[in-house]
Image 1 (tube, rainbow, N blue to C red):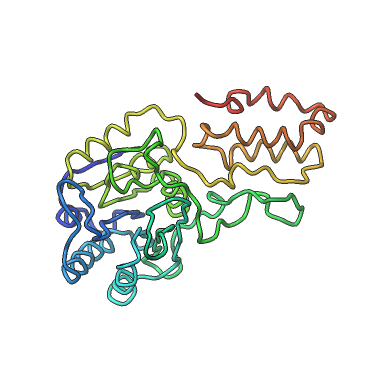
Image 2: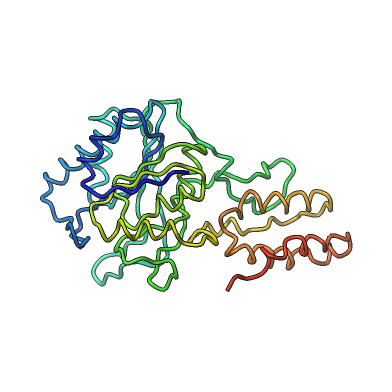
Amino acid sequence: MNQRIILGDAIELLEQIPSESVDLIVTDPPYNLRKNYKVTKDDMSFDEYLEFSRQWLTEAKRVLTPYGSIYIFMGMRYISYLFNILERELKMNFNSWIVWYYTQGIGKTKGFSPRHDDILFFTKHPSKYTFNLDSIRVPQKYYRSVNNMRGSNPGNVWEFSHMHYCNAKRQEHPTQKPEGLYERIILASSNAGDTVLDPFLGSGTLTHVCQHTDRNGIGIEINEQYVQMAKDRLAEKFTGFDSFDEKNLRCPNDLNDADFRIKYLENHIEWFLKNHENVAYRFFEEVKEKYFEKMQKDNQLWFFKKYASLAKKKS
C-alpha cells in the first residue's frame, strides 16, 4: 500500500485534497492544552481554537467519500464543542462516543487524576458506512454453542496501555497514541485498499498501522522532525503493534470437545493474534495451563509444535 507523509499546514493541505477521495479519517488534533510541539504550541484563545476546529472539520467532511467516517481524539475541555460543530453545523451523523481507558496518567493532588481520553465517531451518511464488526471482535470468556465464537463486540470503553516512556517503540512526541487503538478503528471502519487520512499525523501512528493493514495512508504534519520520525517508522522491521486489547489473549473456558477445541484455537490465532506476534506467547501459555492434559489425552500436542514460533517469547 502507498503511504504518503506530507509536510505542511493541515488546513492548507486539506484544501488541496480532492473532494470525496478519502474513506476514513482518524486523527488526534491538538487539544489546546499548551503542549509544546516544537514548531507550534496549542495555546490559542477559546474562540480561535473553535474557529480552527471548524475550518479543518469542514474540509475533513468535504474530502470524505459519501459513505466515509471520521474518528477524532479529543480532551474533555473542547469535546462537546467539536460534537456541536460536527452534528449541528456540519450535519454529520453521530455514531459512538468511545472512552479510551488507561491505568496510568497525569497525577493530580487537587482533583481527580485523568485516566481516559475520548474519541468521537461520526459518519457522513446516516446508515450507509463501513463497519466490519467481525474484524474487531474480542474473544468470549466461555465457550457456549449459542455464542458467536468469532467473539463479542468490544463495546465503547476500550482499555489500552498508554505509550509509556519505557516502551521500546515510544517516540520523542508528547502525545503518541498506541497503535492498537488505530488498528481497531482502521479495521472497523475501512476495507483493504481504502484510503485513510490523518491531518495531524504527529509521530506517524496512522501511516504505520495502514502499512500493516493493507490500507493507503495519508498523513499531514507541520513539524519536519515529526515527518522524519513517521518516515523512519515505516522503515522499521515489523514484529507486531506496540499495544493490544488484553482480551485478545484470552482463551475461552470450557473448550471440552476435542475437534472444536483445535478448530477454535487455530481460528483464534488468525482472528486475534494477527499483527500481535510479539505477545502471542501469552495466549499459548494460557492454552497450556487450561488444556494441556486434555490435549495430551486427545493426541493434540502437535498444535504446540505447529505454532512453536508464535508460542516462543520474543526477545
